[in-house]
Length: 92
Image 1 (cartoon, rainbow, N blue to C red):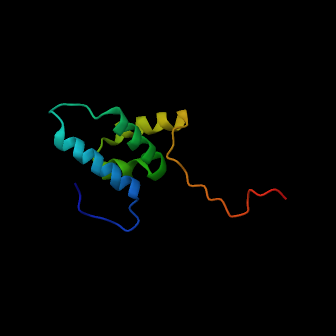
Image 2 (cartoon, rainbow, N blue to C red):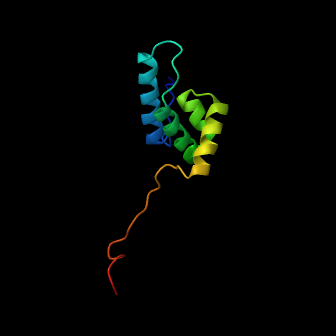
Image 3 (cartoon, one colour):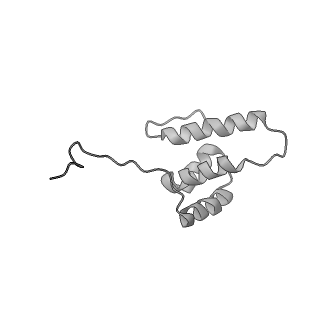
């Protein structure tokens, strides 16, 4: 795992990086990456870019690109932040 850390490195990428590294340490040889990890990586790729995500998670760029495109088509995206201002929902 790369030791370079940037201040703008998203926490979600960092968490996914840890999950994948833990899976890699415990897996049997020639075992496929679990679908749930691919799904998370695809969502992150939609939010943070395919190249950045593939490099950070040490995944194949083209495999991630296909999965990210499928996630984008199906509407699977990383949850977006929505702020609500106080009093914004009160009746007038």
